[in-house]
Image (cartoon, rainbow, N blue to C red):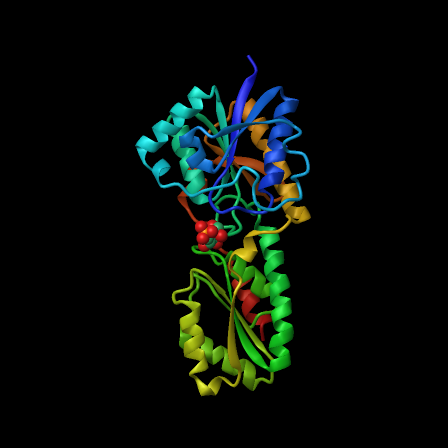
Length: 323
Ligand code: F6P
């Protein structure tokens, strides 16, 4: 009998998810496998919202941001009852394997299904790059380029007005986007959940940049910083010693949209192809991971058990390159 597999995109959307869907559908067809898309992630799974995906359905989506299958964050699937109900839906639809593209929470759901005996493969998709075991997740490169474009623009206006800018980027638990964009965007300071900086220290760094004669100063702040950026802005603008007037820009969800970069299209395509091959090879409970230049399979258990750590070398670079 022809095999039938399903794919869902889950959690925060990430540019490149569509490229992964396309790769899964077309690689499936190559192996005579029928592919179904589950709409709105675990919510759609629980509601039985499945859609047959043919080659035509995934035509023209490679370059599109977001996800044609839509996504959701679902609490019910986090419970054992929800997971059993999800398994029942998969069985009702005659699906015998599932590919989940998403971040930590979504992959934890995938692991739960594997532990119930269902064949599951994960693909890391999250702009945060916080998934352990893979050098890069789908969407990170595009988000980073979006941040850099904004940062370059903000520096133009910052130096015209001799101002300091606070720029908040995404990353609840991880400062990857903040740290990397601070190095690539030439920021004076970076604040991450991994390495918090007190408000007083921020003030001192900005003052130091002013005294050294810089025409502007930029601080990149991850969402997971220990204080709200609005509080920080208020604190800094009350401090007359800083020299610069301070302005705040929160990049927010602009970082999640947009056409995927070449890197993300390639990563998503390679991971989509590898996931289907993994299913054909009867693998389960694993995640596609970029390790060096290779796409490998690593246990989902490892991927979800830790948050990817940030490179010590990047922190050092950020520090001495900002002088
Ligand atoms: O996990 C991806 C992410 O973009 C985080 O960086 C951010 O904190 C979160 O999603 C925002 O989630 P939502 O779109 O549900 O507000």
